[in-house]
Length: 187
Image (cartoon, rainbow, N blue to C red):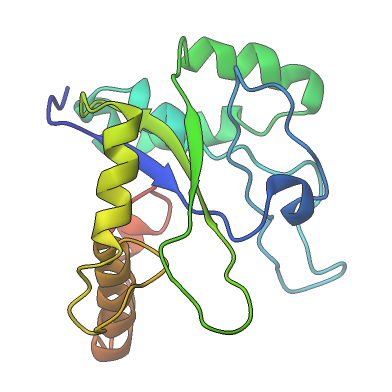
């Protein structure tokens, strides 16, 4: 397995109860939900429950060899199409213990109007830093974005990744690699 420090965070735009019209109350079993893809034909969407995305399981429960094996990831995705009754049992099988915490940061100052805080969820952390230090680092990284003289809402590495993804999408004039289409990957 990979032994480099790892910190997985998400920055939701809306609180979960507003975004999905549901409040997640079972914090022992974090769930990452995706909206089913639209398809052509009658109905326009896939039937059945929303898919559980095994991103968190993928980062915490599988070896590097298994991560690169398409059949394992495909089988994992098939077995994570769960109904609410099956969710607890199936997810618990892949994730034994997760230390999850969240925090809010207001990095900008405004002279008129209001600013909304950015909500950070730390899903997986092997960096060894205390939560206070992660919060301070996140705050300071909002001040070091090269393309803007002021403070930005999200940390600079996130802005750089977003900008890089946009530029790659605009400059590579070819179809994406089909082997990546069914895998979870990050830029």
